[in-house]
Image 1: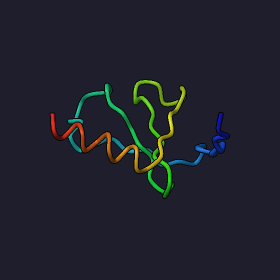
Image 2: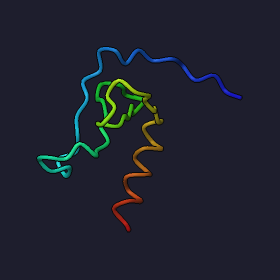
Image 3: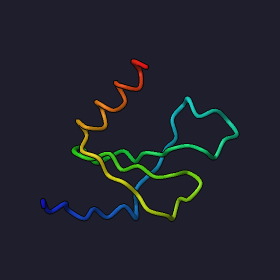
Image 4: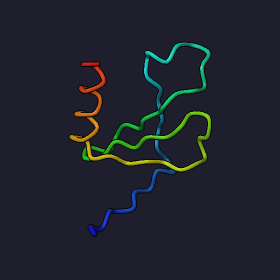
Length: 68
């Protein structure tokens, strides 16, 4: 099992996708400013758990979504 560093996301600035529309709270939010990491959270639960993906894994995930 690999050790995963614990990042302090307490000061993270979260943003929704521009594709989220104006009124929905059913969105994923990501935080910028972490070069090797993409923090992700549920907009309905901003104080809830967060996930962190390696940047290259997140990029591959997003590219795959574009293909579907």
